Figure 1 (cartoon, helix red, strand yellow):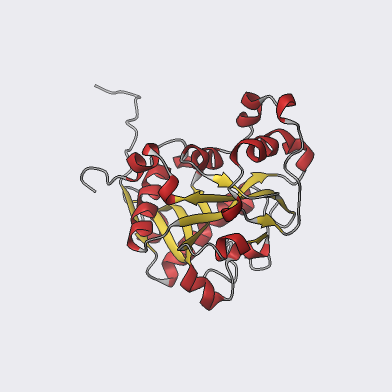
Figure 2 (cartoon, rainbow, N blue to C red):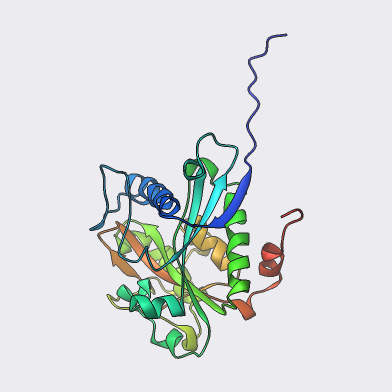
Length: 262
């Protein structure tokens, strides 16, 4: 019997580290779709003709890739999520952490802790709101365990560069989620975040303005650094997210626990 119903294809996720230049190029193509086409970002090494978002740090980072193996094409065509990961030893060879263009990381660097920088986190628009980010995070958790990382950090973004339009969510982050002094990175182009007094803040409305990725980090016990960084080149307002892995709670442990069959 003929039916007009279409059965939705189920994804077949796999998380691996990039192992070739072609893998890194696949991540750069995904980043172009998300950061340039969707969010209006730019940069000196953006290649519009090739559809690539790249920078000088790509060669130093490890690139964590999420593939949907149910998609047609070669493995590079199947990349639907990505993370960049930079350990302290890699940052030493690169000359700095990527975030040091925006934040004073002295507190982190002198903490004596094993640092891991996260960046360029993105998921294809078709896969948001589902299991894709969870799979990426489980891959990240394995990497964290393999390298004994103790403190995770990196810039996370609000869309747009008008801090006044973001006054409520920035104030909420400052008043309720500020990192302890021993881990508190500070913006180099200091944009205050305490723009609304705590007693005047509608916390529920403010949280609705916080991007899903930042909300997820906060639910896992993450903090933010002191001050935002307005990045006109990428059309974003950035905060420095910091996660001290030994302090994370039961939710973190449950999320990062290996899934059955993986």
